[in-house]
Image (cartoon, rainbow, N blue to C red):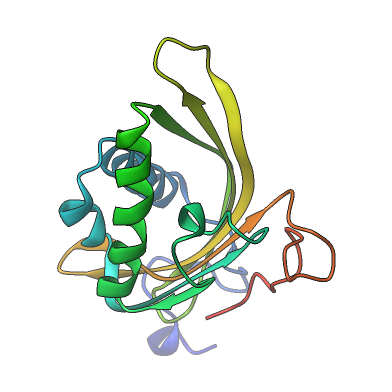
Length: 180
């Protein structure tokens, strides 16, 4: 490659790693921490802003377990996503239950267009009033994140519940991680 055509700071013959660097990993990890705190606290107006206006949110789940059974498994657009979440948060408040979202095993794949494809595991713990914490749900999440106004936003999310029945589009690996 001629010197003038080589991107600044690259080594001749070097292959750019498809894996995220530590700075990007930290940014995305902080994004998810903020997002789950907002959802767990029921701050849905601010949580909604973590999605693009035209975002697609898909859930692969047992019947009745999609946002507490109050929504279709696929929602398109920020307004539809937050409307579905409002029903689930209201039901949780009615039951006086506390829910915690734990995200881990985060894997990032930066794309040439600046988006980042992520894959992670999430465990939802729920504590009923006066009760003990219980595992409410275990999922695999796959997102396409994009930057808007300096912040990360979810453009496409696939949330696959581990207990979704086979053949129902519910196994954690049914959707391709390269979705977009």
